[in-house]
Image 1: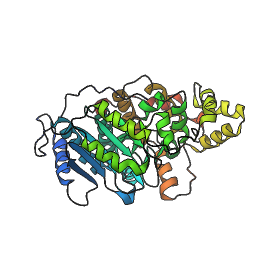
Image 2 (image 1 turned 120 degrees about the horizontal axis):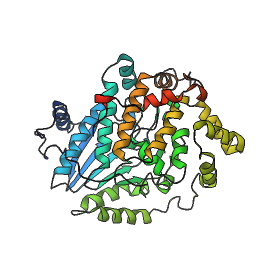
Image 3 (image 1 turned 30 degrees about the vertical axis):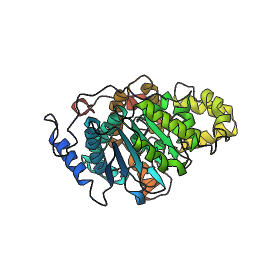
Length: 401
């Protein structure tokens, strides 16, 4: 998987002194800067430390699996901008507190309630989250995500997100505890946070398969497919972090060399084959199609146990989400990360205007009956015009990066 261009952006705010931002920044950025100052307080949801010449971000909601919310986004963004500008910060490390998760998501209920009420949070969360994703994707200094635990783009209990804080960074370190999935089609959403950029860049049709089915990858397999850049055993992560911090003015190649050496020392599960090794050819063949309907036909015609299982999985997903996701992956393969995020913001707002997102949240998170009533309920009921409208420009409300 290739990362996005690291071209420098011209909208950098502030110095490491947290009291000042650039003249061009609005009161929103000033508020974000204030959040960054506040975040150093004990018990904050996100913690910032300077350890030597390393900036260390710790997502600090272990009981909530370090789920991301808008307040945390508003903490992280200005701190990243400040550290990128700071001559005494050489690299950034991001990790999760506790032993269970790197980051399993965001406050989905708050977004749901806001969307129903027409509250601005439904716009603000996605807009500011995607701006943060782009900042990570274009970061000039080495950015290392230690993904020791759950990281999901979709929902887990009451969370979604997590992937966007790691996958667009230059270095992503998975361990045997790492769980990765993008199961948004099961909640009436789509694999956002730049999923339309990195998923189609995985080998063959694997990205499309993961996007449509929400299939989970674990441990070393996450590095094998390219979602992570390295695999390091979890008992070596503390030592790795210390060695990263001890690097003196490291270049990206210096960081890569250190991570490579740790990966070479990590033999756990090295002999285990890739979980989808025997299905790789089938995935490429069955998911090579011009529409979701064609994929379903391919699966039914194939008739293998694997194909029938995928048919059952896809039948449970939102038909609208499946069609949105299929086109998102097609379009994203030809786009830059920035273009993908603009597209995905349009899709996020279409989902906020629609039915299936709210119904998916109800069925999976609130009533937990696992029986969403999708509208339309069939793929044939989702018109091309309805999908086209989801991709249409929002005019002045489009995401600006």
